[in-house]
Amino acid sequence: MEALKIFGIFTVTAVAEIVGCYLPYLWLRQGHSIWLLVPAAFSLAAFVWLLTLHPEAAGRTYAAYGGIYVSVALMWLWLVESTRPTMTDLLGVLICIIGMAVIMFGPRNV
Image (cartoon, rainbow, N blue to C red; front, side, top):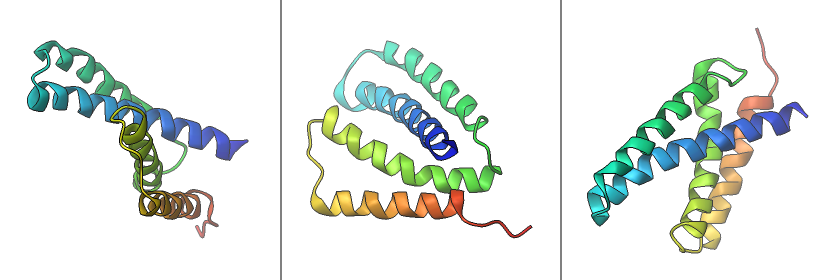
């Protein structure tokens, strides 16, 4: 159950970060309204707050979070940008998820 909770928090955190970065991209690169910066700022603030909810030390959290971020970014690529991930993309995600699991759930020598 703890693993599912951690995975869920990481996933929501990644979505908040991606939205917070994607909206300025739409403004800067695709000519959308500057008003997109308002929800982007809220999304990035939520991202920072969500990072504080993670159960481990900050460095370990950021390292493990990276694995989930990669997988959510590729889902975003597929669902929002309509670009289907390649087999090597999916293999990379699998490697990242395994790395995240090793970091988060491996034994701790104190």
